[in-house]
Image (cartoon, rainbow over all chains, first blue to last red; front, top):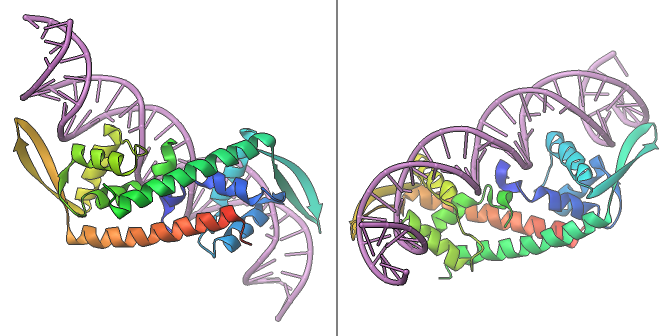
Length: 107
Length: 107
DNA sequence: CTTGACACATCGCGTGGCGATGTATAGCAT
DNA sequence: ATGCTATACATCGCCACGCGATGTGTCAAG
């Protein structure tokens, strides 16, 4: 997967990954890798800054958790995050449709 | 349309726009706007640097043309550009499918 | 006791889309 | 004449952001 492909879409993916159940960063990355069939394999330098950004923006909220001697920061969607996810999903559909239309040469 | 949404996908769209017929920059922008139903309305600061980049990369070739007192730079796909377009279309399909899988929550 | 998975974090680089700005022609309305 | 709009190109600098590199610490397996 080319580097810039993800730009502008990562936030939506992260929000979607914690939509159903709260999860910590590492687990979020695993979820994305699994659901995407390996296509999304987020490096740490991508994952963690993005989560911090989303929390700063109020779309995610986190709490610390200790499991088996390992500290985890568990993220959950805020109500604002839910709304943002819905918006971004709509934009994604529009975007994907527009790209498809261009590729199909629909003049 | 959010700013970064296009990142990493613009090249493919530009290549697709000149795939069938060679066209100049302004016309390419109109084609994309028309095919996308207005979703892609490329500002000039996006369009022209991107075309130059693609020509530098050997994916597009250009010649000057004079029509009605107006100079135009007409772009056509090179064979390398054709191959690149095919590759990028394949990557787009994979990407779109992966995004869809994440959004659908296919675990 | 080292390797690898788990789990977090930050810094700095490079890419690239975009706003602002500038140039020039043509046509139409004022 | 004057100005606005559309056509048509170009470049500069900002800035958002994904990612590689690097660092910290725990735990299990070999």
